[in-house]
Image 1 (cartoon, rainbow, N blue to C red):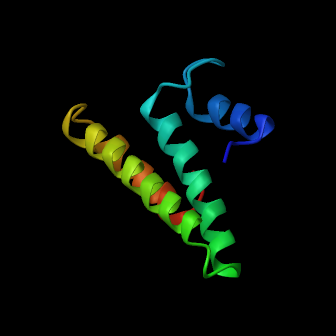
Image 2: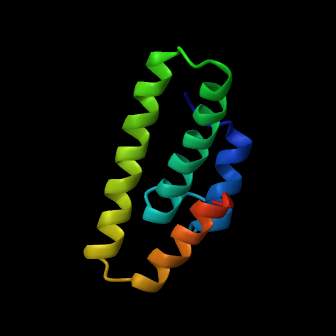
Length: 92
């Protein structure tokens, strides 16, 4: 599943340093969060869609790895906490 181009540009503009900054951790986490929310909504309607459930687990795992990288490697705890708050409220 890919992101709509309009939504992708919006996320990059909001969280990236430039228009083409797709490799930034925060942008990547935002992409994963958007996809996770979309698949979660799909799974609420289609409970027996096991392929989507598997892809949801994979995306959650990737996002978790990026958050772990941000916390331990970058040592930017303030940024880490703000991202976690955004994820919990669903604004990422």
